[in-house]
Structure formats: C-alpha cells, structure tokens
Amino acid sequence: MKKILVFSVMAALFAPLAHGAGFGLNAGSARGDALGGAMVGRADDAAAIYYNPAGIVQLPGDQLMAGVSLVTSKTDVRAGGVTTSSDAGWQYPPHTYYTHQVNDQLWLGAGLFSRFGLDTEFPSDWPGRGNGYLAQVQSYTFNPDVALKLNEQLAIAVGVNATWFDLKMQNAAQEIKGDAIGYGFNVGARYTPSEWLALGAAYQSKVTENVDGSDTSGSLELPQEFSFGIAVKPAPQWSVEVGAVYTGWQSYDKLDVDFKNGSKSVISKDWNNAMRYQAGVEYAATKAWMLRAGYAYDETPIPLQTAAYDVPENDRHEFSLGAGYRWSRWVLDLSYTYMMILDRYIPARPADGVLESNFTKGSGQMIGLSLSTKI
Image 1 (cartoon, rainbow, N blue to C red):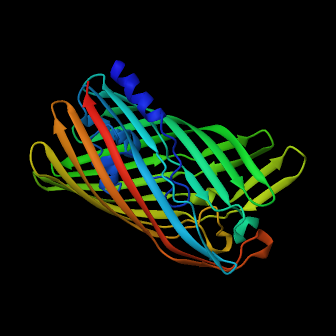
Image 2 (cartoon, rainbow, N blue to C red):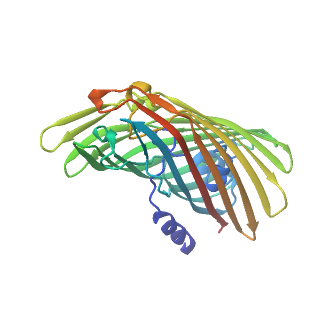
Image 3 (cartoon, helix red, strand yellow):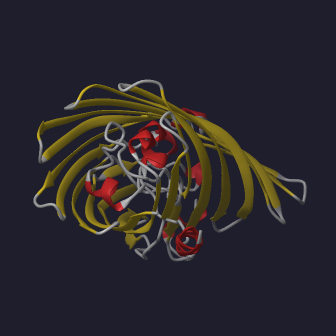
C-alpha cells in the first residue's frame, strides 16, 4: 500500500498540458511512447489500462507503474506580415497504473492519466490576437477496469472513467475559463490464436463536459476513440506491432459559451474524424535490456475552414526510440520522440479574427520515463 501511495503522489505532481493531434494526447507510458503507441495488441504491462485493459490478464499478482512524459512543441505562424513563434515550454502529462489478479479468471485495474491537453501561447500583442493568443486544456482521467480471461485465447475488459477537464482561452476581446467533470466508459478485447500472434481492440466512449467558471459556462464533447493492434513475435527476442487509432473528433462541432453578463458566444469548430497509424518494434538484447523503436502518422482533425490559432498544427510524423532495463522486480523505461509537423496555409477569415497565415517549422519533442514493479 505504501508503494501505491508514493507512486500516486508522484503522478499527481505533474500538470498535463501537452497536446497531440487536435488536443488529444498519446502519452500512455514511456514504453508505449517508444513503440509509437503500438501497445493495443501487446498490452502486456500495467499501461494496458491506457491502451487495452483486456491485456492485464497477462499480469500475475499485483503490478504498479508510474511515470511522466515531458513534451514540448512549437510552430512559427506568419500572419499580418510578421512571423511569431508559439510558446515552446515543457509540459508533463503523467500516468499511474495498478493491476491486481483476483484469481485465474478475474483481474482488476485502475489508472490515472491524461488523454487530453493543450498549451498554446502567443504574445498578447501579436497580430493574430483578435482570434486568440492563449489556449490551455488540462485533464485527468481516473479509470477503473475489470478484466475476464474467458479462455486461453480470449480476454475482455470493461471500465468506467471520470475526466476532470479545465479550459482557458483568451483573445483580445474576451476570456473563456472554467472546469468540469464528465463520465464515460471503455471496453477492450484481446485474442491470441497462437503464441506468436495477438489481436487487440479497445473503445473509449464520448464524454460530455459542462464547463463552468466564475464568468462563463459552456459545453463540449470529448470524442470517442477506437484502437486496433496486431502484435507478432517473429522470433523469441523480437516483437512487432502495427495498428491504428480512430478518433471521432466530429463530436467537437462547436464551443458554446454563455457569459454571466448575459452575452453568448458560439465558436464553430466542425472538426473531422481522424486516424493515427502506428507501428513499433521491440528487441530483447539481453535478459536485462530491451531496445525499442516506433513510428506514427497522426492526422489533424482541424478542417481548413475553421483552423485557428488555438491549435496551430497539421498532420505530423512521429519517430521514437527507447530502452527498458529490468532488475529484480523493477523495470525502468525511457523513450525519446521527435515530432515533425507539416506546414499549412490558412486563408483569412476576418469575421473570426483569422489573418492570412502560414504555419511553418512545426516540431516537437517528447521524453518519457516510467518505473514499474511487481508488488
């Protein structure tokens, strides 16, 4: 119990503000980061709570993992004849997971992590301030799960989740600020027809957040998500997984905001559903050392007609490397990811305060660290 409390406190100290495509995060664990997120079929450590909870049936006894991903990203925006860089500070989305084997058929697990986050900041006097110069999203999700091993090949899992969501947006004329707690559910399945092949699938439901602050209130829907993965072991020392994540960003069609002074703002978003394609390879170099590499292609959900300065992004390539070191009952995982964000041209929309703009030189970095133990 003491170990569980220590790991939970470690995770709670970190504020999750980083963003991936849209304002979604893809930072479930250092090992998962190194493998490009390709952990849906594998799902063979405590971070399965994040990727595919059906996988926790592979974990004997009690297991615990905690860690953090340090993320920074920046984009140059040329608007109004001036090139301005978005703020490139570091953010720290955390993760903590605990799994418990009840018997040969039943497992319990719980996780505390962040699926959504955003931190975009420009100088308050930059040319695009009429549309926005600050956009921040913080979130924590608490997710308990129950997993059943139906037979030697098939496992399923179901869970519920509560997501605390905090939003702050500012432009030259107004500030939108508030927080909320929304609820959803998740399911997962894992099928292993042979020792060298595993198939995984997971689903996260939509979550409605009714954001309320001292001066504003509003609502938005966090998207549903489907994840798929095929893991193969071509040799005892090697494992390879390819997969995809479908995110239903179409639910984020608008941001309705009511101001306590009686005025109202409706910000059109009309985001598209988007795909993330991911692959990862892992090599057991020795009994103690694991080497990893991954790649992902992440589509932006933001259409040209509503693209703005709160999320100055485009499609991206992600290249990852990492290693794991095992000693006694402990495992330390480290990862590094470089994100290459593609350039984008945005035509002017004077009614929205958007100038003719070019998003260029977009890039990001992510450093992951996780520590795991068997209790």
